[in-house]
Image 1 (cartoon, rainbow, N blue to C red):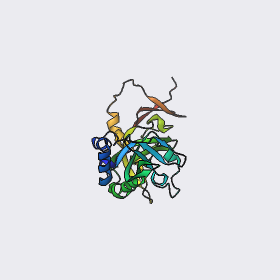
Image 2 (cartoon, rainbow, N blue to C red):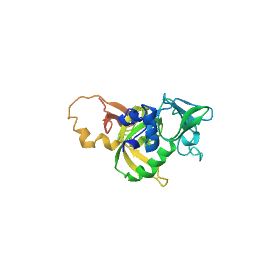
Image 3 (cartoon, helix red, strand yellow):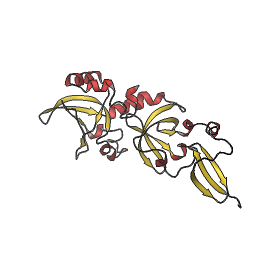
Image 4 (tube, one colour):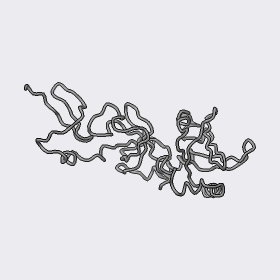
Length: 241
């Protein structure tokens, strides 16, 4: 199941290092169709990704860089953004290219395998690993496996309301998420707030009469909402004193 984890999780794995340690072991990965992971070195003007293994040069052709590229549903910026970041792939073939031995690789096949053989095994309520890939005002996009992204809406990050996801996360964070729902196209919506404890669990950290620190999250006409923990806010009412 490790091969279905988010990109980057496989990079320092023992098996991955073994396959990338020599041309002999690299050939073994080719025949075994083993998923591998390495950092993309650069993206050329035709938006092919290149990887330098030391003993051989690798190319991921543009159409094989991600699901949706050939159909136009995934923009090429998704390819460019992988430069100097780990990418997961299988070896399609090893051939002569520009008078040197070159490995032709496919990231798309790994993502297709993820969608066909792992995603259907997930159910709402499952807790999975994810890596934060980028932040938007409305939520967080997370790699839930092999570079396949899912959305964690801002309302699902915590019970306490926040102005922007950057209050909780930064790009590259490894987090746990809950599979919340699937839409008609199979895309996954995520949640995180259920992992931060219930109201009772969070309230148990505090006692009546204590003076504690908090974060002001909103100011209303009737009082101020103060975050004590991500899943616990309190109302400080105005007084006439």
